[in-house]
Length: 64
Image (cartoon, rainbow, N blue to C red; front, side, top):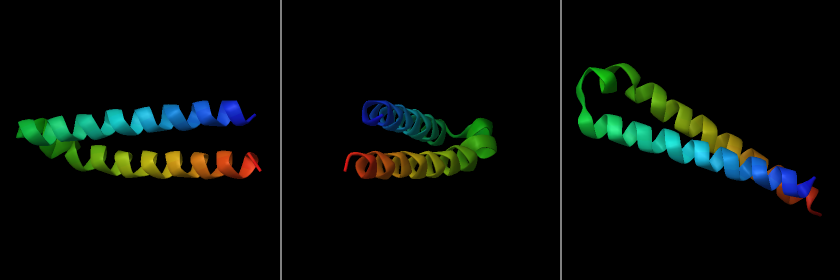
């Protein structure tokens, strides 16, 4: 079970990283896409960070 949780943590971190880079590239380019999706991308980044931290905490507690 602990190995499975760590795989979920890694997947959540990679998704967070992907959303972060999408938001950064959107912000750097500017334009209509950034105006439409910039805040949504950063909001999803925060949500995914929370999910990753929650999964990490659950994996740490399951390890005991």
